[in-house]
Length: 313
Image 1 (tube, rainbow, N blue to C red):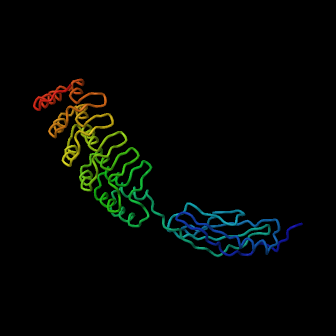
Image 2 (image 1 turned 180 degrees about the horizontal axis):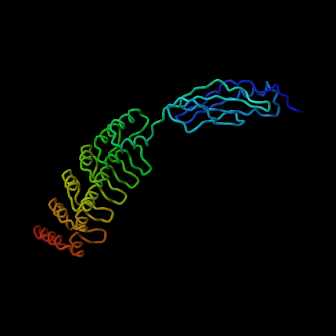
Image 3 (image 1 turned 45 degrees about the vertical axis):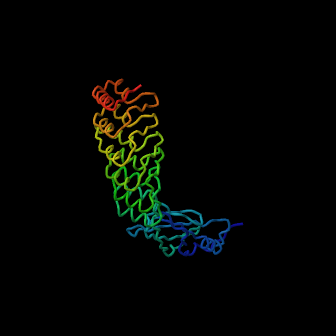
């Protein structure tokens, strides 16, 4: 049976707004489309729909053409007003464009990405604003398992750290490799971060997955910066265990010996580092100094042992 038409479709009502997000607007016209088919006796034929969006210059551009009863426009800007109109078409021609539907996208929801970005920019007020919304937890991690506090500590941003802790950041949280904010601040050589974290009672005895404490990282840093012992001195002053061993049984004294840093060796001996401790391979700091032919350090260790009456078996 042939389809019968009374002509082109009548002007449809404006599209109806469905779900709206910060980057997406859903429009639908199901009832209007059903009415168009009923009024035109379209039978098995379908009415084609065109949707246009008005740009910032007031020009209309087509964003959809097809036979669906709804369509979602994606990739939109948050908190922005958009205007849409529709037109129906059958074999007899096009309808007039509908009246315009105006709709605004919503505000972009805050996520951990926004918080981490604000931290890295040292944006103290921005961090405060984000956390005050309650939409983002101060402990939210990035893809590497770093919390915002870890990033702030590593960058040396104590003001940002203070805001994060006020909003619930845990000073002893560990990342995927087991490192805490204190370890990361130590490795980065950020004295202000270390001092602030100690004031907040960050723990020295936490170990990463390699068995190292913050104090071990302090010694590694000292070695990396030509024996600068400022961070090690600060940690010792605040109660760090100078004889703590890493995963291989190495003490801070052994690490200082291996890296050949005389002033660091002297600092550790001054603070009663135990020269008799042996690593997992049965070697003491003195034996390491001898085998590596570090003559000056060896002499310092020998003088220290003689003074205290220590012998190494």
